[in-house]
Image 1 (tube, rainbow, N blue to C red):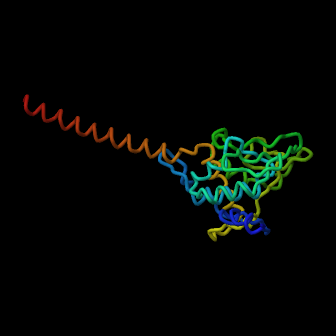
Image 2: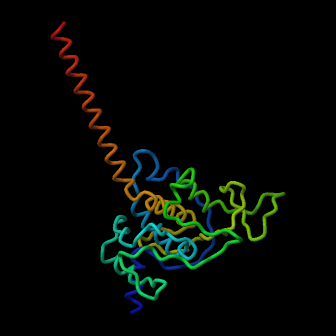
Length: 234
């Protein structure tokens, strides 16, 4: 029984681990950034593992259903196995059509953890801000007094947040063998949350690129036809 429960979790790398935080250079760009950006599905799958293993205990994603994970490249069988391993509030097992399981009520110093379904679309800077926030925990600068139950985060306006630093090296074990540094986990979960906020981002940008190419081609044809007509009239 336990092997059946763990199998779908291992498929996307959800084994908890331990370790100390390591410094790592931030990514110069995310694949999903820019007008031609596309979702890095491998990174987003790893990011789902980080969300499920680290973030889901506090943050819900009410707009997503387990079946949506097929959009990240998971097979129907993996999705069904993953859903079946989740117990809903009524004690029944989730199905692919179930919404992501909501976390239990939690209060962080008077602040309620936000739903992450569209967090990237809601925050200025989007993907980059999520990464900067997750890697922005520091000791407070000299002269800064933190409110009770608060932590210093260099990326957050005002610097004080109710959420503690939650990522650490090897917080999850990636099934694809990627080294799970804290910075890598932050980048991957940022990519996953980008996909969650806009599951059709890759397709939308692809359609846009094709439209630009098509209209550019029409423009060239129109200019060529115009020049030919001018030559004849001249």
